[in-house]
Length: 361
Image 1 (spheres, rainbow, N blue to C red):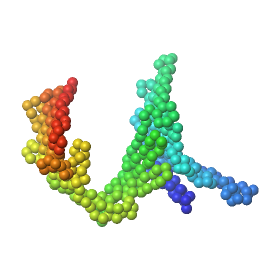
Image 2: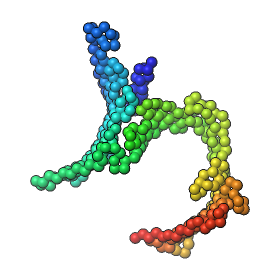
Image 3: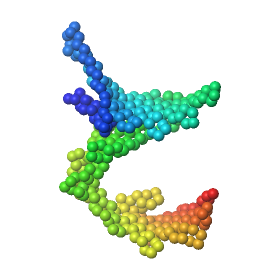
Image 4: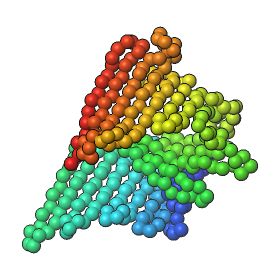
């Protein structure tokens, strides 16, 4: 059963990179060796198997390479190579499925500009990180080359912390948003998300499905969403209450806030209430009311806003905790003046006064 699950995971990983193609190529090379001199069945059977699946679209090729032997899944590699504008790109990601653990990630890029060739190679493995930058060119009889190496390979060098790559693509009848992340220790995860999956008989209910792979686990998360329609002027913050990620039990919904926006002449009035808090500076307030205006002054555009923020259980009148005001005035095409003011009513403190300007030429 365990090996069947492993083989299923191989298919999911392999086809996840390849099944989108109109052009699909590959091979499965398998050799089975039988040693009749062995009395133990496990010792008598030997297996070497390599499965390669390549999806080619335009100038890009995506390949999944899987290795197996009589002990199970022994190797997994993903490769991508293609052209992006003037750049030629390549990337190889290697895992050890038996542990499981990330082994290495190597990415290369090259481009030729005005007769000069530039290249880069990024390497991340269990020993650390490194980045090699190269340049070479020829002028007459003179050939010039340079190589710059960043990172010793001993630990996490050149302040590398994390990289997250995203890509979107169509798959069958849905659009997929994919994300792959690496940190200093190696591979973190890869996700494939399909958002807004429609239910024909329930047009107001949609599902989001997220498939996530880590080196030692795979999860599928389903999240329901309800479309409550469009609100005119007044908007409600409605949260769907449900348990589980699959199967899902929808228990109801919660209204956690309300907001109001309208124009009164040249002034826009906004009122926002969030019972969960998290509004305003330091996210310390649960409600605010704001008036804002934008008009032409004598010299150029003029904007102004004034907001009152409310605390939960404040000690001042009407629980007002903060007054925040901002203004900008474009005095000329090249010169803009701005000012901001904050008064903490709760602590009776004049907390911030900002004056600035922007000059362009």
